[in-house]
Length: 399
Ligand code: BEZ
Image (cartoon, rainbow, N blue to C red; front, side):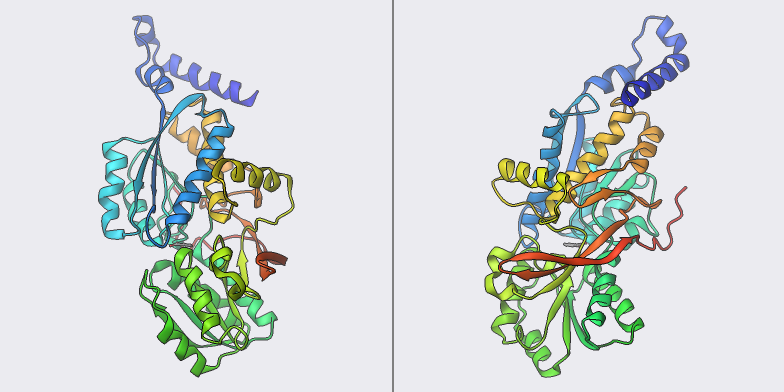
């Protein structure tokens, strides 16, 4: 009903504005051609290397949601143009421009890597395209670089790790070491953890930055063993997370120094980590055991479509498509109605597998962060670590 009414409004407004053209017997170019042409979705994600599985699951989640909507967005067919980000910020300008200026995509979905995200955002801010970030947590995206046409369906780096510091304090730890991949994501996460941990009286005795995407962890783990902290906070994801948790156990640290981190440390990699992951505690805005109808439906559908279990990355891709579908339904598929499209996307709320999806004014999800612990080879939700957490959106001045 709403969809139909909005469609009529948009069309009537166009016809009023283009009365002279219509009277002369010409079809209104943007509406007539644009409405029939496929919606072009540019996807810039990693498909090789340590974040390959993240990129694959985001893509599968996105396509699953579009397929569930009958394979159309706003009543139009969909054309995907997929580019491998290679997780390399220096390559991001060329790859983003290829999609935005070369392919003239309507939406650009990506990336996974915070460094790539900042490059993309710098380009996209000045363009007509709408960017939907389905993973990278770079604070600036919905902070100092926020823009009407930039949306995120995942998290900010700060959101994932601020609750983790609070949990570690509640668990009685006072001296901690942080270990992380040393680029924007890892740096922002260890800072967010340190913010809540030190505010509550904790002390970070050592920060260990590992070059991205190195998986040579041994020397750092030897250092941690010598420091004997109460606990360790870690950010690694994908292939790196799978390896570091195994190396941590092999170094004899698992039974002596409890391991914590944002949920990427155990998300989608428990099969590879095996026994080594038992007892690891993480904070995340999703867990595949969440017992709600949207999650039950999503998990079953993802398993059928992709042949594997869903994870947080799949959810973020799925929700990126939901966000675009809602916006495009509101404008009857007319991507030229940019302001209406953006307004509709910003105001959208829907039942996501993670719970109710709601965006802040800066276009970043406001969401619960769960405390999980690995037990018997799966993450078990122990409770909500931080309810309805919004990113501070520092420096965001949405015009
Ligand atoms: C990031 O670079 O923002 C990121 C990558 C993997 C997992 C979480 C965050």
